[in-house]
Length: 327
Image 1 (cartoon, rainbow, N blue to C red):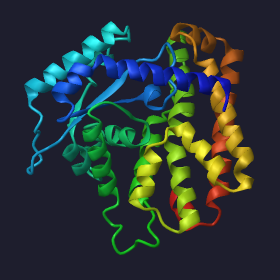
Image 2 (image 1 turned 120 degrees about the horizontal axis):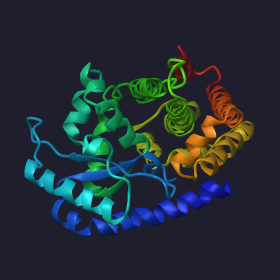
Image 3 (image 1 turned 60 degrees about the vertical axis):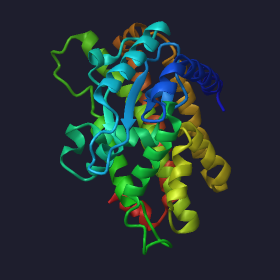
């Protein structure tokens, strides 16, 4: 494990404990009826002192799919979350709280494969729940939510127990990656230099953190399928309990010896990324205004992508699941 990743993990664990302690009263009042989970760097277990706190609220629904967590309780819970972030000196929620959304488990499941999945943001909320989240309130509700979502993705498992490929989930992961990974540099040449540098910075972060979030899940599932010929719901639940970097380490422990160089390259590239981004955004923007530094960062992102590609090809080989991911 790299020094940057090790330090980030330890600091994140400490800060998540502080967040949960800060929500102890909210936990007592709401924790059996809703869950709050964090995504982003806290969900990945790699937060820095400059990280903000990205939160989602998920509650149960009644038999008709209606919220069973009352609106006034939601307002009170959001107030608790806002007060927590201010006490612990996190940046204010982006968009003046616009993205501090409350979904029901039914919301996350019913939109699977529907046109509104993107526009309602349920695709993002559902996949981040599975791929990079940590509960900070309502662990029991969180567990039910993840189980229900996995069950929805495995709805065709019966009758294919010995050869199941999680095609639906894999396709959604690829869709999330391709939706998020917009080329932020491909904008007008008349764009102000500072704004262009911010886009480059965002692109650099996406091509590290979100690439690892999405593709370590695919690598894990692909590895399980190659070994056993199928992927069970239990396999998926085991996968989502691991952060993206821990999935890479799982591959090193459970994979074939030939995968080792690519696994190590992925971890080395990512550790370097964590070191680069452990500074205020304004300082990072200045770096991306420097053409030479910016070119180096673009090269770093490309090296990580190459290492992930090599690992994907090494694990996939001629398997039917690998083919599904490619074509």
